[in-house]
Length: 268
Image (cartoon, rainbow, N blue to C red; front, side, top):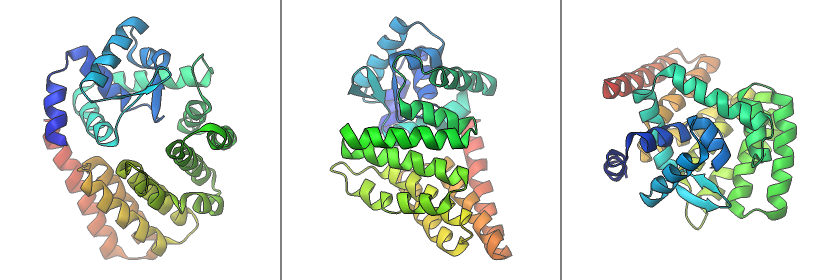
């Protein structure tokens, strides 16, 4: 997958490549044309042409209704390239623009985008309320994958808001359900395992959390996602610290540092 991605990415013009990198940073699963234009800071007609280019190259999916999504492995690699190639201030400015766009409930903005923008801004209780409504909407009219994503988003918000028990109940079935989709979603399965581990850690159950973080690590290795592997090791280190296991904590921190150093070398 990485080799295929790299070939397609190298064939993009600079503006389309920049848009792909920025799309990996915004918090929602999909994005509409108005938000994509705001994210890129470019007119909608230019942005639409570049979105179509990404879809033609297999780097984005046209989800219908004017929305585009990135396949999980593409999102992983595009996020790595954003960290490697884009100025941090420009990345931050692009993310701020699209979050502000979502929070104004601009035309085309859904509850998912609003709720995730609230979560990014640490307005946790509002995020929970909005993402609960988004889940209800998904259950009324969305396909099964959309419902799973809505449950995951709400579970993440509940973890952040300190509602660990509710989060564990909501997140618990998700890894198996993402794996059981007609087209298994390994990226979101791994993300759900990380979120589930965070919920157990918040509930002061570090032993159970280690199990989920370990499964998440395996999933991220399979995706060849070093940044997410490093995140899993950081969580494992925190779980070990809470258990008082200094050796395991040190091992996990060393593994995290090695992965981040390898990524930095790749950037150079």
